[in-house]
Length: 300
Image (tube, one colour):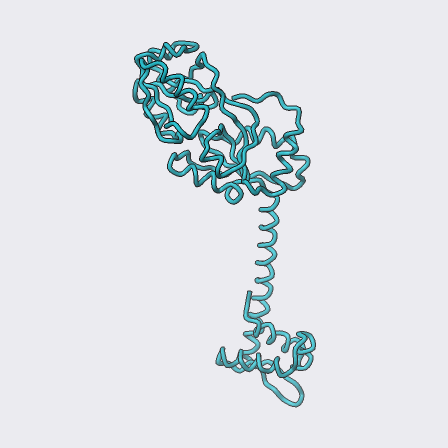
C-alpha cells in the first residue's frame, strides 16, 4: 500500500538506531542504511541526523514521520474495510429483477430457508428487459447475479446458465383491451382465424415451436415474428395494433393495456431459477434446501 522505504524509516525513528531497526525487520544494518539513503535521495530531504550517540529526526524528518504514521493507520483501515467488504460479498445473494423476470418468487423461497444462512443478506439488482442485451445479463450469472428468476426453455439461455425448475407457466394470448377477443374468458384456436399472431422466431424455444407447428396447421392465422426475446417494446406493439400475441400467464400484469387470455391448448414452459454453471457452494446449498421443501406444485 506504500513505499517499503518509508516503513524502514519509521522503524529506524522508533528504534533510535539502524541496528535495532534491522533486527526488527530481519535484514542487515547496511540494508537499512541503504534504504534510508535511497529515501532521502528520492525526496531530496535530509530525514535523519547521524552521530556517535545515535540518530535523531531532522525537522523535515519529523514531518515525514508524522504523516507516514498517519498513512500507515489510514492504509490499515482501508485494508480492513476492503476485507469487510469482501466478507459482505461472500455472504450476500444478488438477485436480478426486471419487469418480465421479477425476483419475488426467490424472496418467497428465501424466507423459508434463510435460517440456514446466518449473516446472509439479499441484494436486489434491477436490470432492463432488452432483447438485444438479455444474453449478456444471463452470462453475468456468477458475477453480477447469483440468481435470476423466470420462464426458460431458450436454447441460447441454457448455453449460458444452469436451471432449477420450480414449476411451469402456461402460454396464453394477449390482446389489447379494445380487441374484439378481449371480452372472451378462454380462446379456441379458431377464435384466432383472420388474426395476426405475434410470436418469437422459431428455433430457440421448444415450447413456442410446438405452438407454431400447431398454428401453422391453421392457414387462416397469420404469424408475425418478433424479436427472439421479448421486451416491453413487443408488448407495446401488441397494445398499439389489433394483433394478438403469444404470452405467459405470469406476464398478465406487465402491460396494463393488454388482456391475457387462456387458450384451449397444453403448452407449458418451465419456470424456475437460473444460476451460474460453476455456481459457488452457497448457491448449491440454497438449491439443495429448497429441493427438500414440501412445496406445492408451482405454476404461474
